[in-house]
Image (cartoon, rainbow, N blue to C red):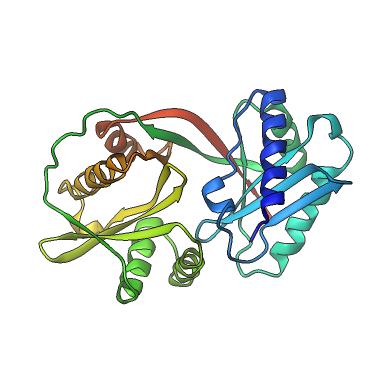
Length: 274
């Protein structure tokens, strides 16, 4: 688990980088504050000052990476050192797929990624609920908190919904079980478990991820009804609600827009062949 001192150093460096480069980094604070798993954080200090930081996030079958270096200390090999530490770490893991995250506006990141030989893979829209009135659901569904008895069903839904192997899905489920503030909800329709979603809380912010409906039950309004219920639940608790949607996922994008989500930024991902 990261210490309060480390978290403050990361936050300070993030503010410096974002102000200097006029970008918004995706550091996934809702995961950083609750890290309970393997070492996925890499630091470069000079004295007491954090000059470089890189983080890995397991997303099922692959790792995502985000990194930053103090603008006054670039071209000194700091990123190279951090990146080599990450590659060394991945050699000891079963999952070696790596996607490097970078804001589209970051010229520095673009130059670095070209030097690494990383190739553009995909982009995500980051969306925020806009406090609009939610529509009435077209289907009647029930959300319930997942239990240990749902383990196999969760694994199966992740396999079907996200094109994971069973081993990859099991690893993802076991990693997320160790993270504080993470909740999994099962979606029920007429007494059948037909989907699931995950919520991650960070202060007054709630992040929706891992949202999928069994292929046999799609196109029945179930996903939209479940999303409406989540928005009502979290908004009544005073939470700001976020979600990420792949730019190629037009159905997902339209679904979130229909419930009142709006895009506020885009993040690009580049595949690095380890």
